[in-house]
Length: 384
Image (tube, rainbow, N blue to C red; front, side, top):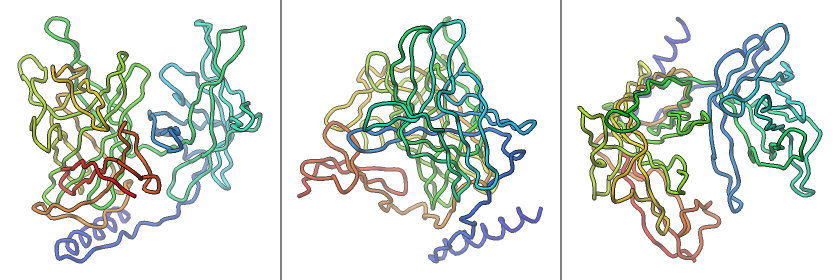
């Protein structure tokens, strides 16, 4: 169609200019009109943020669904697997989604109940005003206010539990399909999963949100990497959560036994690229294939996340295929040559592994430099 043809022309020009050293700027519009109520039906990814020592970080994410029928907007899976559907108000003039204070998210036969409210942090009390998700120019919905779940047993007192210190909802623009194995021998179970995801591409950097289900509650994980002009992608190991014994869950590449469907060692063990995951991306057709990886047990030591020496693991992911809409991702302004290595991001962490904004990076800290080919370098530095 005409829209796709215009996109392909822009994309081809971007590639040609990038290859000749001239950087192309994406022509995508920065302003999107709010959709009508009828247009809201579809799959979405909800991303919740929480504050740790004053720094707001992405805490969890999952897919949810909106359904519009008979002038009513219904949200399904807003909280977790098994959470109750509820209705919300929608204003098509400005795109605001309003959730009534005290909306019930969990209840029923278990006797355990949860209700959602805005939270007054100064007075440590719930607010009775609606929770309003404001429509953004990029087509997402956002709220910066703190939200809590008031939780308790039916008939008893309710106590607050933070839901988020900020929430973003984006319409899913991708689908992730994976084949995974859990357990060993005769007790091994195979999972063939599919879930709505969100792919974000900026320059030669790609992030997939809600890529894999990381726990029994339906929450997913994100994975960030880079790709080159020849379609090679590389992803750094990612911390995706904690296990019951408080070890970290680390998603990293692996060598594997094809017959027993289990990992036998992390990729490039002992090198700077230990645990990196490789893949192949086709921007034009919107596909990303990721090579085998595993969810390993790991530890934090002076800001560095390392895999357990016994190479224990929780899950073996044999294949991952992500199908995404090229028109629905962010801009691709510059493509990096395959044989170059240039820094693309610098991050700061304290010695316990907590990420710091640049303004708070003082004293003895860890500076992580990420390169365009997926490699990274950690250095202990002193910043005055």
